[in-house]
Amino acid sequence: MRNLLHDMNPSIKFITVTIAMLGLAFFFNPWTPLLFFFSIIVLQLCCSRMDWKIWSLFMLPFAFGAFGYLWTTIVFAAETGGTVIWSAFGFDVTDEQWALALSLSFRVLAFSSLSLLFALTTDPVRFVMSLMQQLKLSPKLAYGVLVGYQFLPVLKDEFFQIQQAHRLRGAAVEKYWWQRLLGVRRIIIPMLAGAVRKAERAAFAMEARGFTGEPRKEYYQPVSLKLKDFGLASAILTLVIASSIAGAMLSA
Image 1: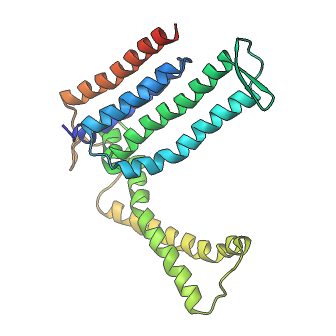
Image 2 (image 1 turned 90 degrees about the horizontal axis):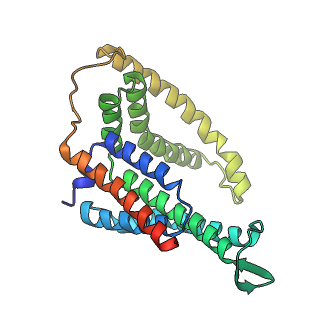
């Protein structure tokens, strides 16, 4: 039960999340995105092995962004009429302004919760393989993305190695941020040269193993479609519909 979202077909999950986001964009009452946000949290509690500490760290900037939408919409919103519900620091806030501000803020939370659901329960390699098998993504693009993804940890290690090598050779340690920013070019140029060499070796290795970029019918790691994938997709879309109906009733 706790592995359902992790085992869900990535392509189906991607399409479902996209449809859910597009559907939420058409509702402007504050209740629909708020209800959907809590529904997604409950779904993750029941159907995923989410590390909630990591989830909270990723959610923190989105929460600040939601508060920024709330504040700027209240302070800088155009006159929309409505009944004044409270005043502070010379600003009159109407019920329509307050509803619009809450709607934008809760929409940020709803979209970010969906994005984190996809990002934290989807293996990147399996996602690319699923795009290639189910959505017929070009193998040239798919394997290029996979090779680039595998190089990311190597680039991070090379950055620190080159930085330490400069310090061992007596390079001065910059004190100010602008000095460190200008000093990055001494590290970036060798990294770019090394990246070009790695790309050439990777291309030669793929050609030597018979990679031509042509579509394939058989895969070493097939990503299959199962009935539970469509069941989870239906559950997420049902949450969108239920949240929209409940939000409309609460806003009436």
